[in-house]
Length: 435
Ligand code: GLA
Image 1 (cartoon, helix red, strand yellow):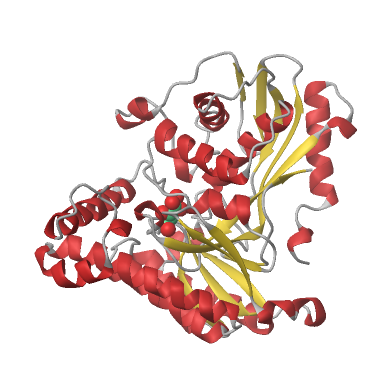
Image 2 (tube, rainbow, N blue to C red):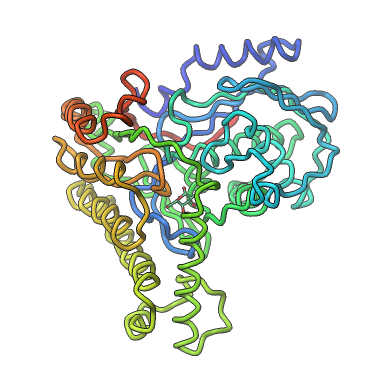
């Protein structure tokens, strides 16, 4: 098992067969976009402020099988949801924000892209982004999209994985060669402009830039990135895996775009930045916390009201954890890396005030689970799951511990988790690609 364990040949063939049936074309002509889910060990909630983040992908995610439609028609079916999305690439796509905000639209947007009635917004959003940046999209696609069962709305960024998948499919069908950097921007247009979520570029950067065995570090202000290999992870080829990524599900499913928490935290960070920039005579700069010098923050943090002060404290402390974490990762020090992840989780609870009781309980259980180096909420932390880095030899014991402890605290939510799905043990993945 490893990055290459997903997708399996049988998963690919299922998708290819489906698209061949839909299009009447030969299976050999079907291309498949592999678009993995991402995790962010350190750097939570600071991408939208231009902070430095760390990320990697896991070995599961979205598969989008497609063939060029030979005309302007787009026809998409979903493995999870009924119905069919149909439109023409000649149609001008307009942002959905207004209809989402006034409730007339069923979009669950960023956090639940495949939900019934809303999943069609992503191919349209991808077309919107491509058109907006002047790309000529003449050819549609006939496609079939499928997410990993049970991982929708879990904070693993299925929305960015879906957005990226449609971008890559349209580009491939139209023979466009687009750089990862441009696709990061296009996915930002889908989320920020088309759907109205004020998120940063962490998710799509992880999906487009990650490489198996490396931690991806992205400076969200300069847009520079690097891949950092851990010496410990180089042992993998010799010793089987020593490290696993554990996903623990709370049973909560709530969408980011229908939860005002995400955008209101972004606004609070901006308000804090504005006050700090004014205090230092820099009001001309864009109100982002990355535009505030650390010394200015230290000198003027007393000017912020307590809520804003906590948001700013999260930003500055998280940036410093990321810097320390990159060093720990590069030197293979998983103990230190893990402690920083857990500290990041605590700051998300205490300073950023994301999360909710079940997620906080799950986080605390993970901290006590055998072999866990560190844990935190995944994604925005308003729903979904927690992630942990765990010693591979003890991953099963950790999973057993979680499955015993969580239902004691949240019996109802735990009972809603299908089958054995409360805990998944994953490996790192690779970047999104068309095969
Ligand atoms: C969501 C957003 C990202 C990022 C994370 C929190 O996944 O889409 O931009 O802000 O939350 O780190």
